[in-house]
Structures are given as C-alpha cells and as structure tokens.
Image (cartoon, rainbow, N blue to C red; front, side, top):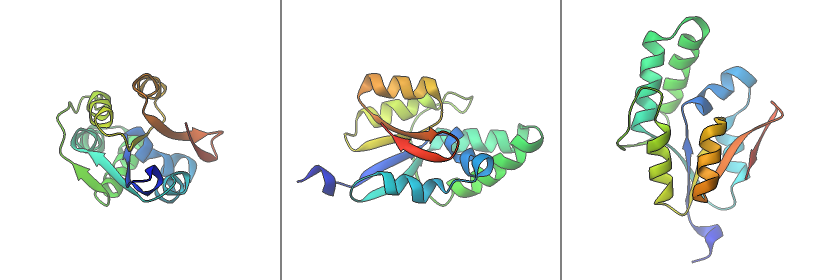
Length: 135
C-alpha cells in the first residue's frame, strides 16, 4: 500500500495540548494539514493522567489551561498505554511511536523531539510562535 494512503497517528504530548491557549493555534486542523493522507489525532493515557494532575494541582493559569486541555483531550482517541503521570509520559509516547511506522509525535518538548529524531519518528511542533512544522 502507498505510504501516503496509510492512516497516520498524530500523538499529542501533554505540552502540545496547551498550544491553543498559549498561541491561539488550531492544533488539530493544522496538524492534519501537515500530514499527507489520512490521519487521526490520538493521545495516550499517561498524557491524560498528567493533564488531570495539572488540572487539580496546577497553579493559576496553568491549572485553567490544563482543565481546557483535558477537555480537548477527551475529544481525541485515547489509547491505553503504560506510563507515568509524573511528567514523564514521554517514555510511553516514544515506546508507542517506535512500534508504529506511521506515528508522528506532536510536541514542543525539545528533549522529546530529540529522542524521537534518534528513533526515526517524525514530529510536529510550533515554529516561530505562529505556525506548526513537521520534521
């Protein structure tokens, strides 16, 4: 099957869910526009757990944004995956993406992007505070 025809999974990281509230970007639409062919937006259970933790224990604006991000996460496909909810959902994301050749990680975390690059996984990220890019 042609690679462009495979459904690609765009995996949203915790920090990526905050992007619409910080930079006014439509991350779902923009992410899909960057990917050739069909795609679905997903996130992993450790990411949702992290958002839940931030929405109850976060401070000020972070807490408000985490609640909004959690609402957004509930509208994408949530995949059960092992991982920790203590800020290190990254390992679960890398492990999940490593096993799926059509996975793309959406994150603004430079460390996660570097790890994805080492694993040969594409990433979507904010470039110039005004648009998304893929590499």
